[in-house]
Amino acid sequence: MKFESLVNPTVLKQPVYEPGKPIEEVARELGLDPAGIIKLASNENPFGPSPRALAAARAALEHGELYPDGGCFALRQKLAATRGLAADQFIVGNGSNEVIELLGHALLRPGDEVVMGAPAFVVYKLVTLLFGAKAVEVPLVQHRHDLGRIAAAVTPRTRMVYVCSPNNPTGTANSETEMLAFARAMPEHVVTVFDEAYAEYVEPTPDLRPLVREGRNVVCLRTFSKIYGLASLRVGYGYAAAETAALLNRVRQPFNVNAIAQAAAIAALDDHEFTAKCVRENRAGLARLEAGFRELGREFVPSVANFILVHVGDGLKVFDTLQRRGVIVRPVKSYGLPEWIRVTVGTREQNERLLAELKRALG
Ligand SMILES: Cc1ncc(COP(=O)(O)O)c(C=O)c1O
Image (cartoon, rainbow, N blue to C red; front, side, top):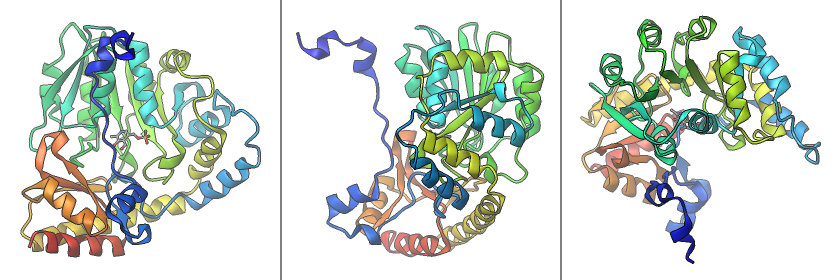
């Protein structure tokens, strides 16, 4: 029998995640020199990995023959000390993407509903569909999560609600007060998930830890892929009530996070100098891009994250033109925004190059 006729029918309907293209792939396809290409497509850190993390990762490689600590003991201890929670309130994943999947494993049954903003990070929907659950998408209002509307979409079948703040792809955020009130008002059968992948860029960063301390049904997601510059190593985490973290632990693979990533993450948490620089440069970069978009007469969505949406008319066309010129950005048609592109804030030089190429591309 053909494999296709044997697979779970849910898999046949499953949409495929479209990542930002790697530099090497673009170089290969377009015959460009990879050294001349800049990637502003996946909200990575243009300043590279945290230097402390890089040194720790190199040292950890020396023991590449050993399995990692599956329980991420030292990393959870460090997170506890850094974030003022207990070590058993953390669940570490192969990127925060994995924690999103663990939530699916632990919580979702066919017919359950998961409420999320639209557009928001597409993996919430992908994981929801993979488990046979229904994605209930609530349109953003002025590119921002409207928490009142999201709360109104909750039904007795709702199992989870996702709030992404700052939101990918819009870069907009909800306030700490709003998010705390929202989670406190959720009915008991609903788990509220706050995705804080870009929270470190927000000044001041909203503090959602009171919800965990109050024992609410919440899971907050963070990642080392963005401000700490470790996207390639794949490490992220959730913090939640200890009972919640323990249940999520049951559904992960035994060695889900490699030792190099664990060592790098521990060191990154101490690299305050690096993260402060990244926040500072990002703030200046956003201001520069906004000024540049204004000069080009282009609408943009004011952002508090390390990326920004700009209106370009035909997003796919502009994406393609920029890519041929060695600047990779993200078209967001699949997010329902065909007239926009999403641009990661780069170094000063990269931002200037993007603006110059965009000007050219827009004629
Ligand atoms: C909002 C949001 N959440 C989660 C992730 C996943 O990050 P990672 O799996 O690298 O931790 C991303 C990545 O782009 C994101 O934008």
